Image (cartoon, rainbow, N blue to C red; front, side):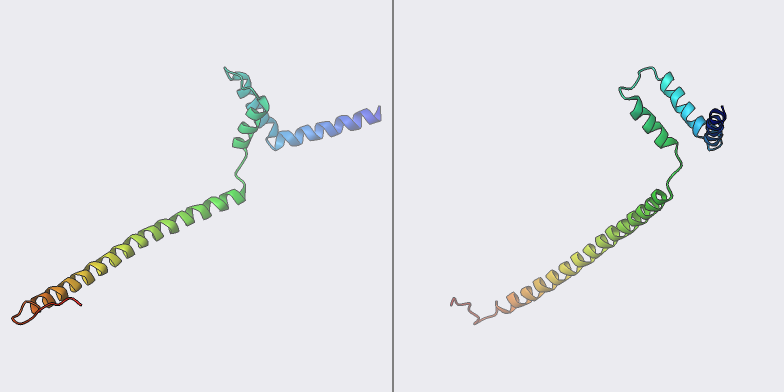
Length: 122
């Protein structure tokens, strides 16, 4: 008889522990949601896993990873913006150099039109 009371006492302690930590309430809510589901899912276990996963608090590591991801996205966007500006700058320099080259070519072609100047093939 003493063995029976010891086991019963442990069960009661465990039940109180589950109740205090909110496990019983959460399980009850998920099971009620499954019960009230008009079309029962093919896998009740997957339903429970999905709904229990959504009910658990965020893992601190996950939150850190989310913050890191947001920071990386900001850095990426800044890099993309800087890249656009640098490409525009390079294109301007190319255009300026081309204008300069065409100007020199026009000048040279004007010099080649003078009297007594002949272009010969080699």
